[in-house]
Picture 1 (cartoon, rainbow, N blue to C red):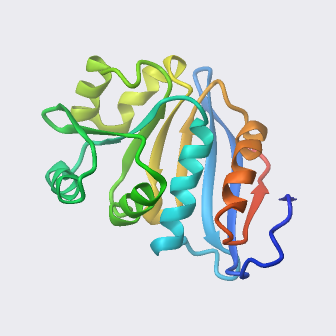
Picture 2: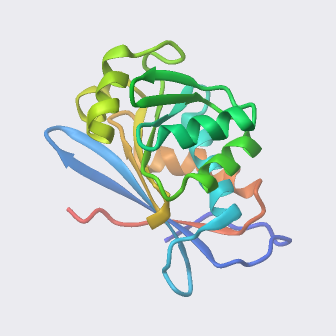
Picture 3: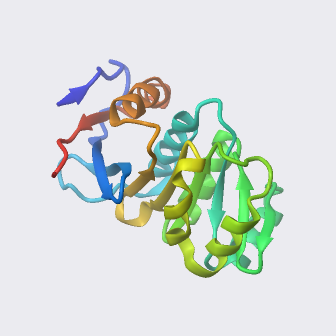
Length: 201
């Protein structure tokens, strides 16, 4: 079912953000997102996708400190950040952390690196280092999040090229995520329908 109404002045660009509660097994829960075009069900790409995904991450984190984790092709990410004066921290030999970028910076960053799978997390030890996690991210990628999700508000797997965001969280329900998203996405004036999908379980 569609949640909320879109502003009348917003152009109808035909976007849909489907949100589904996930049971990840071993006592772990999550929330899955899929951002698609309504007419084709193809993933949304480009600047609009960058703005939607960026606003979503910020809104879900709310008042908690949060960051992006990169662990592949980090030379490209490091060069991009240096060129655009974006704050970052080299966390391990193959891990780079970018603390909560400003909205316009975040949207451009997400768009630029959408072809890569990267991570995000909120709460926990942030903004301080999590040496153990960041070292494991360097060697194991997003698999490093599984043992630590109870220490964070959420950890997330960002697969934006294919239109997916997966929150690993035992603290946020899909209902709470939708409550946080609604005002943030309305501000974008991109007419995004937020749809609650039923759990496949």
